Figure (cartoon, rainbow, N blue to C red):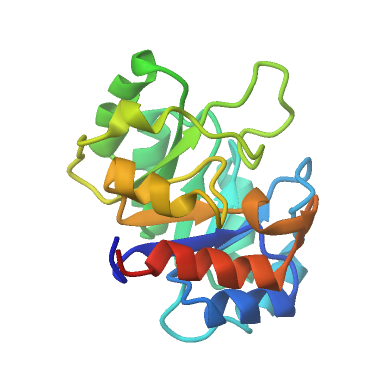
Length: 216
């Protein structure tokens, strides 16, 4: 590994979460705008949290199949640097969002088996970044943040023409191995830094950042 692994701490809900993530070397902080998630924040809460984020850390809004009206309201009220589309958005929808808002778009793609990999090539043609997440179970309420990992060997040695982020089931204890196996230069964590569902643990945040960015 190397110190240039970039970490996205997602699902942050309090000023203490922001401070811990910044202290752990965050490149990105993610705010969840999906009411079914225990990590969801209101627009007012997100606006206040965004004001706590130090300069140089990218503020990411995670949305799920949001329409233009929702995104209009979100971006009118919260200073966001990047949109993360974590639903069933089509490539055409991704391209539309990019063109309408002029912000970089990260598209999450669920991976369970080799049959899911072609979608990554498709979305790489329209998104600014890809987020490779474990595909949720069929009965899952949440499209992500389920604490599940996929078989990292599926993507070992694979590359795409845009930056990509490894997500799904990462913890302070396995992130080093995940980076080693996949060659990921960016990782995303939410469940793996929680002491209770939706409640972040500053000690786990610090441990995750140190493990992800440690020298080999």
